[in-house]
Amino acid sequence: MAGIEVLVVGSGGREHALALGLSNSDSVSKVHCTPGNAGTSMVAVNHQVPDTDIEGIVDLAIQLSVSLVVVGPEASTGERPF
Image (cartoon, rainbow, N blue to C red; front, side):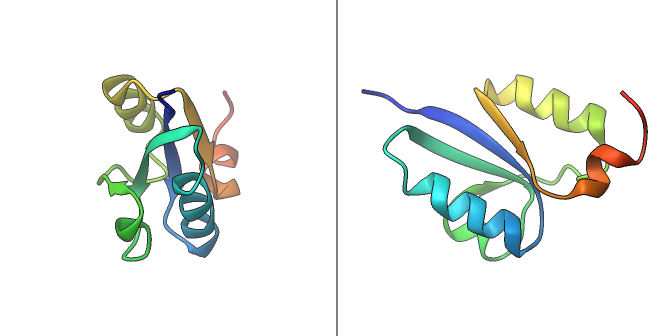
């Protein structure tokens, strides 16, 4: 069974732990991170969209056709209303 593709948003240790856990899941075929860090690059594909660029993250998620977006840092969602 093919797994889903996931996008993890953020660049800290929390996002590294999330990406590592997701990459070890049989339900996940590929993990993407934005912007990611050196640790996430070992278990995921890093992209260069800042975690504060909401439109950029949405565009990236659409472009990658991910099934799930996991937002790590609270600041990404709290800086402006939706």
